[in-house]
Length: 78
Image (cartoon, rainbow, N blue to C red; front, side):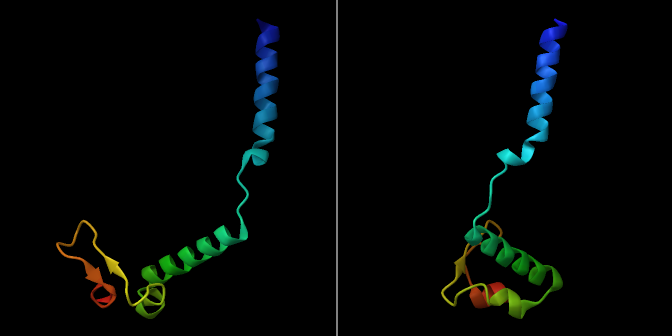
């Protein structure tokens, strides 16, 4: 029993120490998207409508659960 527990402990320690080998490596495209998302959320939190609006095309339409009708870019900016 002690030998089995020792083997499980060693396996657990090896897995714990090699944690980074199982981590996903981000591509440059994914890093670019994340940077854009961070900028967008910073603009939302700071109330900067100009920076926020540049992330949406003029043909943007959104219909979330809080609205009874679809919203376009100009309505969403209000």
